Length: 322
Ligand code: NDP
Image (cartoon, rainbow, N blue to C red; front, side, top):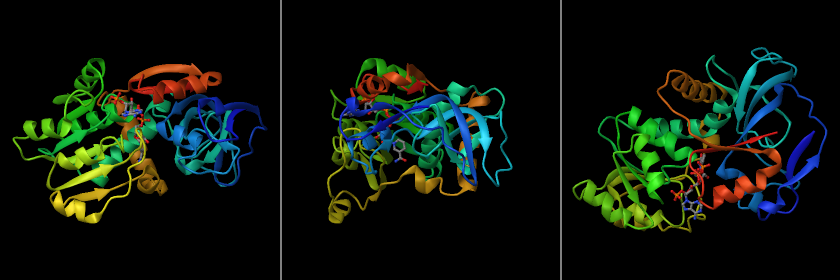
């Protein structure tokens, strides 16, 4: 089968197509014939070496497809089932053998492309709004990169929970998408001082929580956007990783809370994984959440997909097709 591997961490050109054997599902695993692959920003971190793995590095954390075979001990899934999975690396391929507990059978009405577009980023939005910071009616949330794959789902989920959402993004076209997802206010953070705007929009108080996936470029102004005892959730590095921070800074800025969460720790058990995954897919089936697919690229164009994502040229979700 074909798979994309990285032998030397670096630019998009390091995503190289290779011929590798179809994997055999081990105990507790399922073999999936992949239909659609979800592209996530984390794929670029493994490609560049920001996140470490031993070469050759298998890229991709998410896909949908059909069960081809099951390993010993798998009882809840069977050949032919339409499924999606996330959080096991190596999805840029024709087939993947992955743990059954990280695989979810698709409810009727959920297509394979929607599932591959929704699972990882939807589960991320789920834990950020339900568990890292529990959004309630009346919470004011500042959400950066709101027209991105994760951002559009995060805005919608925060709104479902009753938040007032102040969103940021880079262009008027992206602002329109953020508004369609439910954002109450949108700040163009390349043109405007988003901390000053967030304070103005909250009558000087500051927001209750900031969801910051941009990282280095926005970190300090995000702290400046918070009310005293507000929570800073820094969960990504799209502009580069956040440099070290002195705890005293959090005191000076208003006894703030700071957390740097990752989905792996919020979907760590089968029960937690399946809870978040089924909420996301059921809400889509019910029409409560909408998924915005930017483009589906052939697997052989994975490098172009990475260039577009890192070039801020995309909105919503990018998919690859084997
Ligand atoms: P997006 O679709 O959000 O794409 C990234 C967006 O970030 C861009 O479109 C751009 O939006 C914005 N951005 C701001 N500055 C830059 C920059 N210098 N270079 C590139 N992009 C920039 O990607 P994803 O939804 O896949 O991921 C979003 C973030 O969430 C990533 O940082 C990712 O690592 C993180 N993430 C974290 C998880 C976790 O559990 N911790 C899980 C899933 C995602 P604009 O043009 O509007 O500024």
